[in-house]
Amino acid sequence: MPTSTGAEWSAYEAQIHAELPAFAGWLDAHELPDHAKDQRNGSVCWHDPYIVSLLSIQSPEHQLGQLLTHCVDRGLVVSSTPLVAMAILDAMREDDGIRQTARNLVHDDPAILGRYLGRIVADSARYRRTMGLDLSVAGKRRGATMYQVRLVPECEDARQGFCEIS
Image 1 (cartoon, helix red, strand yellow):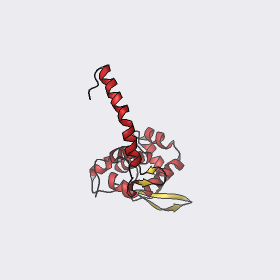
Image 2 (cartoon, one colour):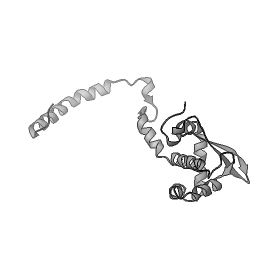
Image 3 (cartoon, one colour):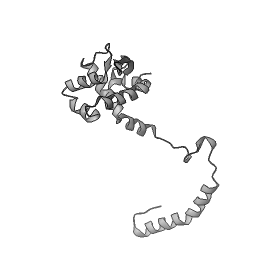
Image 4 (spheres, one colour):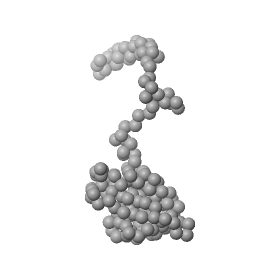
């Protein structure tokens, strides 16, 4: 229905108003399939996979993953050496190119860095697949968690997030 003039727009609006009762009746009679029902909201929420992937790229954990791969690539973090969060933070401070980004991300606080590292470890399969980053807990030293940072060599582009490793 065209809506380029005021009269056409009014006719369009009248048509919508005329069909609302029939639409409301259809909605009232509609049965939601069991797989689409949800206890909390009535129906299951749908998340567009593309939008979800864009949001995950903006997460602090993803940004930290990029900083960690940069540190390993530059030799600031040696993948064979287990490190505490403070040592990883010091390594990120050494590189002029990422120092400010690291400060903005973790505010020079090893506790915040440790929280993000823990989240990456908890979801390590995804970070290994999407970024080529393998982060694991290597033990404890004086009560502090030690992390092992390694890069998975199967896909060089995965470090920049351009492909997924199968």
